[in-house]
Image (cartoon, rainbow, N blue to C red; front, side, top):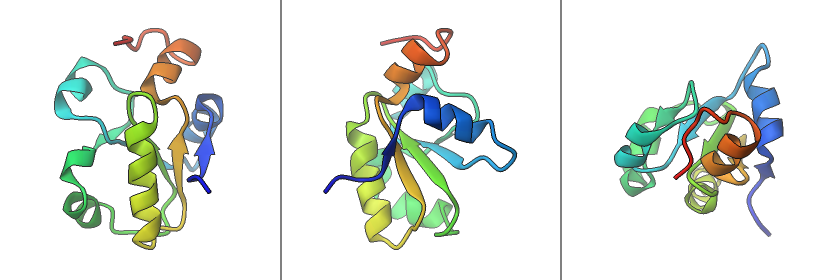
Length: 109
């Protein structure tokens, strides 16, 4: 069974709500410098498993996880769920889908 996943449209709706989830980008710093979703925090998958456990201290806080196309973020979501985080969701299609469907000002690479 796969990890919990939502579309970029659903992610956009959740991020626009009065109580948005925390948005975590698990791409690498060079990708982050090229483009990012506004409001996201960088936490590269290459820094797992230690960094997320230091920076994400509320295991009940809603988290949306994304990367370029959703492969790395799927791994990150699975890892966080196995660590006891209870509300972690992978953003299907990643920043590429976000660029195509939500915000065309975010560069595609």
